[in-house]
Amino acid sequence: FEPWNDPNQRPYIAFENITKKFGDFVAVKDLTLHIFQREFFALLGGSGCGKSTLLRMLAGFENPTEGQILLDGENMSGVPPYKRPVNMMFQSYALFPHMSVEKNIAFGLKQDGMAKSEIDDRVNNMLKLVKLDQFGKRKPHQLSGGQRQRVALARSIAKRPKVLLLDEPLGALDKKLREETQFELMDLQQDLGLTFVVVTHDQEEAMTMADRIAVMDVGRIIQIGTPAEIYEAPKSEFVASFIGDINIFRGEVTAVKGGVVDIETPDGMVIRSETPHAHATGEKASFAIRPEKLRVSRTRPEGGINAASGEVWDIGYLGDMTVFHIKLKSGDVVKASLLNAVRTVEDPFSYDEEIWVSFAPDSGVVLSN
Ligand code: ATP
Image (cartoon, rainbow, N blue to C red; front, side, top):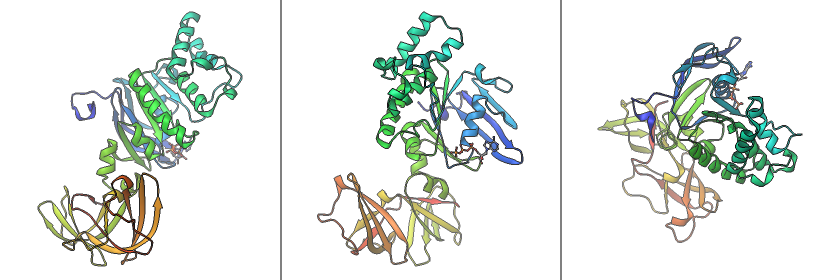
């Protein structure tokens, strides 16, 4: 399932050169984005980057200042929200407090004039789907936060929209429940065969659930790709540091040879890395490497490149892994994480101990800034 790699696939949702201004303020800038049918797509970015505005334009609550939005090939301009095959689930759940769970779910169907027997069937179906069969008669205040969230979800899919838009859907849940619900949402999306577009500022949430992620900043898409592409091959420092933890070494290119560059840092460390991009001697470059790709050893690695010594500054034991902060001779602090299940050293590193960090030439990425 990778329709985005198939040039013959027509996008299901197409934002074409969308600009959105609020007065003089430009919230979205000439943005083009294609989302495919049955995709679980995440818009990820910090506060104010324009992700909710994009979602609201798709729902029809806002109109683009310039550009077009197409849904299943049809131009949506001038089509009111209730006529779009799209439904939005809001962060605040917005359930009717005085209505039972059943009535909350039935509300939209009733408004559409659906026959009572059909509504009852549909509501029962939805309750089963979100595993709340026993809770139909309760009022929202008699439910837990996670259960309320599932009622909101049931209500937003009861009308069988083709596209479900979710704005920070799990924001109000605690960490454990949020993680569980992420997998429930994924199962649901698969079972129903719907297209989901979720807005989130939580990178773990986007990584877990989405087929593809668009990382946004100030009204633009900075990078788009599968979670693995974004994590393993970030194109810029912004993306690298927005998603997960990263160590960045800055320096100057001192040699370029057949897809391999040498970058020298101001304190004389030489980094040799593979790179698919063209670089020239003398240019500034940075090298980014994830904490789990750094090797940590007591003895000096052979070869002398891709290695630096320092001392153990902080140790964080997280159960599945241990995170070390290592203060290098240069004064920079790098993060290394070691999986506890595969720790190779007999005795764990201790505070202030002198150690070496090193890495393989293909274990990080050279970034253009
Ligand atoms: P958050 O995660 O904080 O919700 P966001 O990425 O969803 O952020 P948007 O809600 O899309 O951000 O807003 C993008 C920018 O547009 C913000 O700077 C916001 O202040 C501005 N904006 C949004 N709606 C309006 C409006 N109706 N009038 C004026 N400015 C607006």
